Image (cartoon, rainbow, N blue to C red; front, side, top):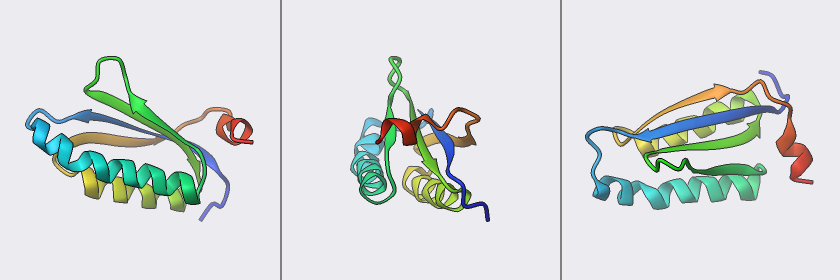
Length: 99
């Protein structure tokens, strides 16, 4: 496995069949995942776009840590949020800004 930190992005949108109750059910779990990441791994920027049904999280991680986080995120969001993770070929700005 590659131990280099790389920028990653997770883009999510509310699924067509999701209800407000579904969103409220997973919201605290997502907040907990992000809080845990920030307290153990480093900076994560996350939030919704102005259209509200879509959001994005940007973070730096090794391949292994990114895949593990994405799996945890997927487990929480299953059938409620449509989401994808991409390795983002951007300058590693988060590590610079977090110092």
